[in-house]
Length: 303
Image 1 (cartoon, rainbow, N blue to C red):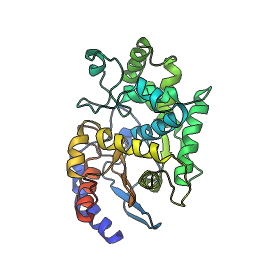
Image 2: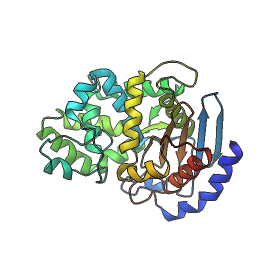
Image 3: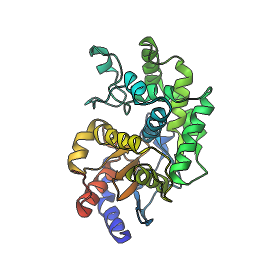
Image 4: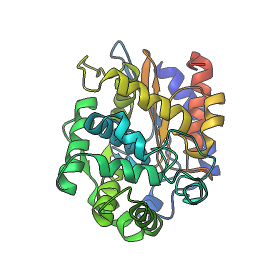
């Protein structure tokens, strides 16, 4: 496995030159766009790594999966999906357009920013710190890593420039889908700034692949919630490239604009990828190509 991963990283390294780091978040713009790396964690506890990636990077939109799991565990499916839809969208992840033209005025799914803000608001906790602390605890449970923290510099960089998300939050308040704009926004941006390792990403993917069971076989997420999360990852996890990704790669995955991709192959493995050079839709350009090749060579597609 390690030799295969090393070969694929080398093969797709050139793709990093075709993308660019997220420049609308100042600190993410400072990342090294030439980095590309992957970690695979298998059911039999094998851990395989190849390529270059930082010791830690921020989850960004990958955290939406964690928030969704926790909100459903806290409030139940009926409550969550009365306020957020289940449909994919062909629009960018930060778009507000569909909410304005549809009769049912709620975000189309939990993986776009508007839906994620609503989901974060549903997580139980009296304060921002309590909500985010509960997300961090769930990540620690899923990964076995007790050193999960928020990158305060990245949070502050996002908070000071997050004008579109703030506008989305005010629109959601007008629709009575959230109550406290600034607290919801802060909790959401703090969850995006949670730092993880590439191995953590792979272990989260493995936990979902095993329907809630961790690398060391502890049940931390109900199987039905794991199934729901993976379904959203297939239909909405790669922004408005999710359909193409499902056809070409065929595994549940969630990307983030820091360059991470978390993938989950049911009952087989979890995969963490990092490549901060993004395509125009916000996905790691080399990381996506790497996953497509890996899926084809190992026959990973669930379809």
